[in-house]
Image (cartoon, rainbow, N blue to C red):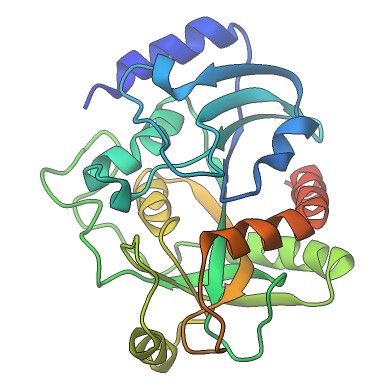
Length: 269
């Protein structure tokens, strides 16, 4: 994959700006876009090598600008394996961010609650993940310019950053959750039996994104913090049918809290 062509394209358009932090905005969480100052917006379709986001609630644009005194680059919309892309295409932007010199990344997502103590609208800071049901994003020839063949995954999510962002979440929400995120390929929601199995394995929330990005970011030597917005309870937890509409509705309900959490966290980075 030609990451360098995308890097050159972005550098030409942002001039002297040097983004120091990357943010990936999950389903319904693009509201943060409005807070970015002096922004430059690049459509995915115009960036060499970038896939196109096809999911409702994912705008499909890269935003570079200032937020909380930091120069950031934000993905307003991500790519998922279930959209039909090769797994490596879904993380193309993360490799580009690495070549732009970015060392810190914030990943966000909308997730289903597996932990029976959780409720829609909760925020969960991810401290570990399950991904062995899905194809490895590092499968194939190792890209040595980014990292080693067999990267250690014992501390994907930075412990100090987890403490920082949990303290901030506690100020803006009723409770700050911390737990394990299970990555499933989608696009169908999980069955109740699958959710029971994931709970037995220690998962607290489930979703169809984030983990491939986290693995590649770790492979590239980035510091990672990840936050899930629990937008619904997973299959079988309640009698309610699952829908993407519910995901968007809950994300919309908590978007102001989410926005303030990320802005305050950036101040402490």
